[in-house]
Length: 274
Ligand code: ADP
Ligand code: MG
Image: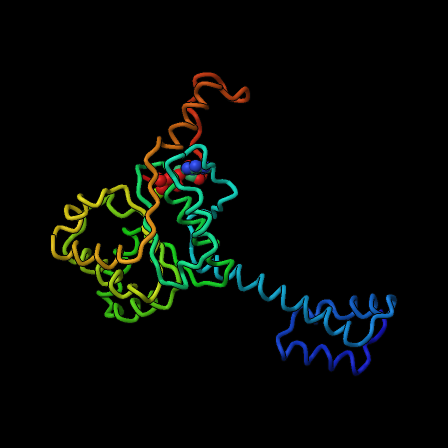
């Protein structure tokens, strides 16, 4: 290996200091290619800076996806609209573009279990991450439990402020479990603070008439619905459960690799969901 000369060492040092890891990794290869192709100095610099920029965007998108804490990564590519004709494809595709986030509008996804609500909410969130937005995914139950813990540790205000800094907050599975009074109030606080500050994506199996039963207070439910639905896009999924259909299909066409009589295996992505 030939010993590195002083300019090389200095260059590496500066690239490290300036936090330009892709340029550090690639400059030698790009320099060799440019020398071969008779590319000028500006062309060389452009190639390197382009690579650094692309890598940086990729790294920050990956970081945003990690911070969002999706239970499973889902995108629209794997969503079969034919399986759920009640879902308006045009609206879903429009929302994927993300302008609703700039307008601080909310998305409410309503429907029975297994109709793709969590899948769509996650896909909106993932698209948001790719578009440079800060996203956080919670099941409503997990969010409320966390907020209660934070309240006990006198960290509630800090935690709520942290949530306010998101661009998209996904609240999955509203309505599976009724709330205590404290839990209702905490969720109301989250929705109030989100109002006109950020976009909420809420999934629920509950028709509006039943929300009072979950929140236990008519006045609070009214105020919460008012804020949530002031500017909202509603996606309704009222078809059959996709899970059930898949299971039935598997039962009808037994997998040749599986012994007869075995129950169909649960899908990996189906874990922990009601
Ligand atoms: P929900 O949240 O409405 O109960 P999920 O979004 O969790 O339903 O969907 C259950 C499973 O079925 C997931 O693995 C999801 O990816 C899949 N699924 C549901 N609907 C569709 C669809 N229309 N196309 C493809 N996969 C779907
Ligand atoms: Mg779900």
